[in-house]
Image 1 (cartoon, rainbow, N blue to C red):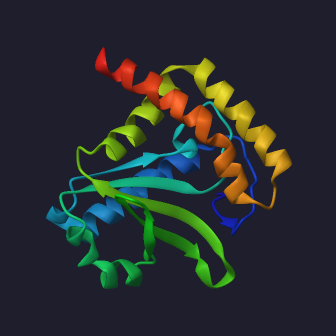
Image 2 (image 1 turned 60 degrees about the horizontal axis):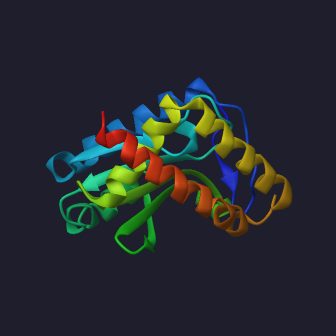
Image 3 (image 1 turned 45 degrees about the vertical axis):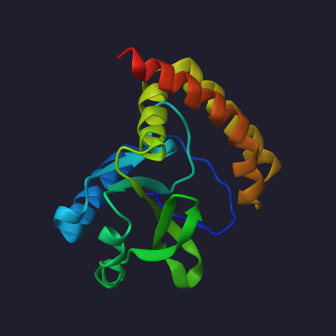
Length: 179
């Protein structure tokens, strides 16, 4: 199973069924640890889009009613290899898994408020691209181009995707509204 990437590196791999299995497993682990304090956990990000290549890092979106619902579990999460990193962007907290002593990340856990725009963006983006292969392939082509330009600069890689991601999120939201 190929999961994990050293900090700042950008490497894309073809989709692997093991990513889906790992997504299910880490969501179950989070639900077991957080109990009633979690509203939902979903495998999101490029590893959840079956027809495209992705960085071999599993992204999970976790919905909570209040950020304190997860923060009070930080010690237990860390004991289970899920380490709090920081407030990643306004309205989201980020956890990581992996061989962090060697700067290898295998999972990013994005914690957001349940039913928030951030939550819906994660779910809509995944579902839209899985239902629209042409949009997924356009996203994949951009990712491949950025990967070749920035193989050791993940920030530039991520920044290069922002415009297309914003366009796809608009389409995904419109698509979801008519579902």
